[in-house]
Length: 130
Image (cartoon, rainbow, N blue to C red; front, side, top):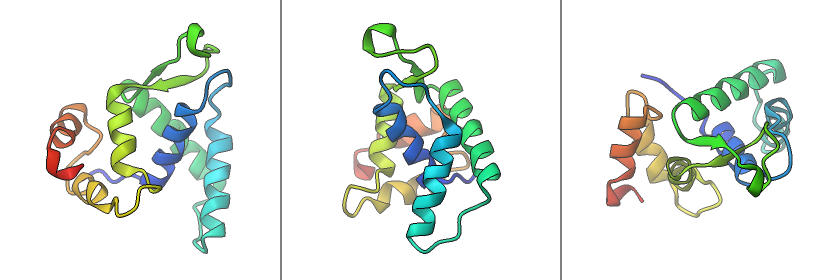
């Protein structure tokens, strides 16, 4: 069973969502994630490990169709992304700013690989998890 750091993925997806006209910087987002984790009283992984994980997630999200290159006409720099419909669905399932939004995470965690495109699309299509 594949497990994911949903908080880090959420941060990356928010950065993609708000990333017009700026390059995607996985290392910086990992650093921000570590600082936020520390501020919450938790001990984050070592920053180099988080940065490597963020780069791996960036690659995975791109390969599996959760993000795509941002077009020039929408603030693309050649090094930044935009959310796809699948990526928007994922963000809505894991967004911690939505009160009582734990059910989506629980359902995702129950999957063998929640970010497998076929698995995710099937799970996301079920109205009871939204």
